[in-house]
Every structure is written in C-alpha cells, then in structure tokens.
Length: 228
View 1: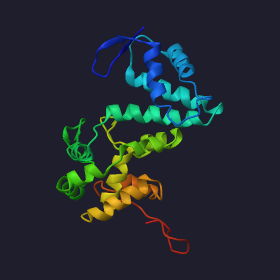
View 2: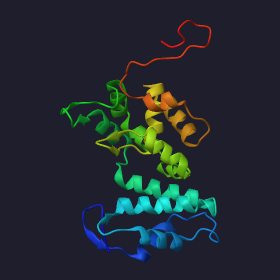
View 3: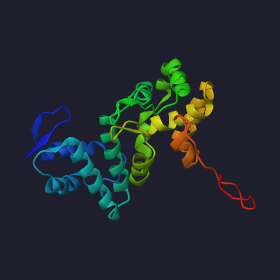
View 4: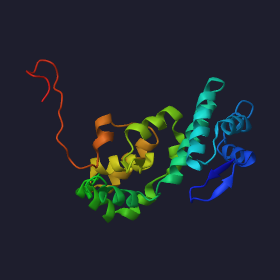
C-alpha cells in the first residue's frame, strides 16, 4: 500500500511512522488511556491505494475523535492532528496570508476578488514585522476537535476551495479589522482572544478585515419592520 507525500513523492504506508507522528502529539495526555498504536491500527484498516498524507491525517484525526467516547483526551489529540495537518497546508506568516487573500483572483471569471479590504491590507503590510512576530501559533493546539472543525468549516477564509488561514491568522485579522492603525491595541486584543479571555460575535469573526458588503441588521422589538 502506498501513500502520496505532499511534494508528490510516493512512499509505502508505514505503521511505525504513523504511530510516531501521532505519539508526538500525545504530550500531556493520559498515557494509560490514549493509545497511539490503536489509532494507527484503525487508520491502516481504512486506507486505500493512492491515499495522500493530507487524507491520512484527516483519517487519523477523525479516528481519534471517534475514540473520545473512551477518554476525553482523544478529543484533544484529534484537534492536534487536524491543526498540525492544516499548518502543513498553509503559509505561516500572517502578512503573506493577508497578501494572498487580498490578491485573490476568482478562477471563474479571472477577475480580482480581494477577500481582505484595501485599508486592512495596507495596515498589515505597513506593520508586517510587528504583527507577524506577535502571533503564537502553538495556541492553535489549544482548541478541541469540535471547536477547531467549527472554525475550519465556517470562519477561516478559503481560496480555491482550500483553507488559507490558520486560527491565529483569523484572530489577528479580526483584531486589526477592529483597531486598524492602533497596532498596540490590535496585538493586545489578539493575545486576549487567542488565550480565550473573550471572543467576538460571529458577524465580527466572519467580516472583520474583509471588504464591506451590504448587510441587514436587526432592531429590538417594538420598531416597525424589525429588520432593515
């Protein structure tokens, strides 16, 4: 059975290699209840000829998530596998990701379709070094599986059908989107959000830093119409 690496190389599926990768993500988990080899056995039974390493990691994360019924630490492990997989597929530097999103070209009509507002793009480019160095990517590993998959499915921006952002990129984008040129406040907000002291409502997470679009809003009861 062969697996295709991210660079296109073909390699034989190796039980020990998968187990070692899962084991590296088991730090701090209960060793008596979290069994990396058991996950690998289930993954091996589900692989097929020509599977790629992205799909292999997805299968390992889903397998660990299913095993949460035996111990809650499996949910943490599942998230770590999924986050590690995303990190391998995305660029690290926040400013590079913002640049890619701003210069995105719609493949259907070949026209520019920026996913970041020009104002926020210019701020990020101006303060790239400061913003890039403030981000702590290890905090992505603090999400549980359900929380991470919710972010991946609904909040992280995509280009050409693939997730382009990491959770920390999202939080910094939201922070800069709120505070603009006040970089000190933006970084302070980023750290508070990434350490889970608070979060913003879904509309803010969806839209902060992106080009303005027409939107409805709700008024409290008692106003005629209610929605405008």
